Length: 346
Image (cartoon, rainbow, N blue to C red; front, top):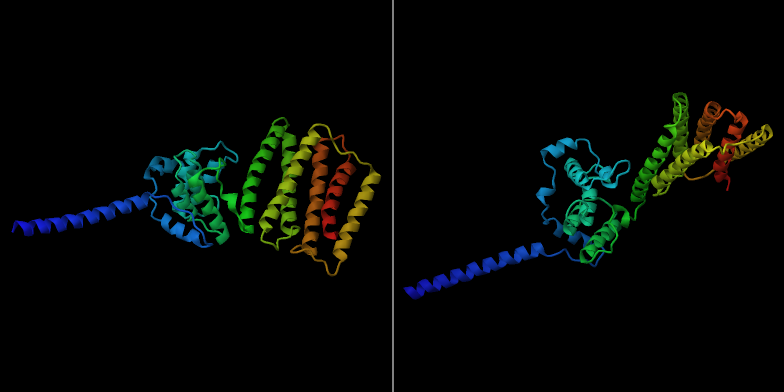
């Protein structure tokens, strides 16, 4: 009887030992790092494994933090386009955005991916970074390169901060990454303009507001009608043109404030105006004009808006820089417009 009891107890102990071993093995597997992959679709297996990675509950915002961050933007809090970066608030905001459905490319999961990969305001967690990377939508090659990048960082950091734009392959993401850089540039230009306006009278500020409104209308027309948008990089090209126009606008104001003002004669304006009409006429006269998505009607519409923008400069110039003649302002702007339109004759 005792032998039978001991036998049963022995089998029970064996069973319990096997169960304990399997449980321990499960815990060990949970703790093992996600491994690298080989094939083009290997990243999908890594993402499947990443689903089991637990996220630190303490990293989420509490009720008070969530309330204070209502309407927040994690990208601005993380990068600091026009504010001081705050990685802790960025993390809290990103969790809130993720819960709302990751509506933006640079939001929710993308920001959390970078925060955990870089250890910004929180302990580095490569597995959590991979988990969030797997939540993103992107071209297969983009996903593969990004996740392989994160897997490689687990084995040893290269010292460079990890970023969403490190491994892009699509024109779609190229546009969004260009847009991010444009936000930095816009904030920098705004600081320069604000510094200039701080020294102006209210009358000059009001005049500049009208000029800037006219510039924005022309810039919008130029980007919409005179940039070829047939390729996958169309968004990046439009952002590039917007950046070019904005930078030229602000640097011109800065140059004029230093006394480097345009000076042209009536004869020079007549010559420039004649050349503008010739270039514009050649474009509109072409029966088989082709420049991607750019059309003759689009150029015609933009030209009309540009003419109003040119006159807005004449009005503002008379107000702020009365020593400059109207013909000088018109010549300066006309030469710039000629250069734009000549692109379509090359």
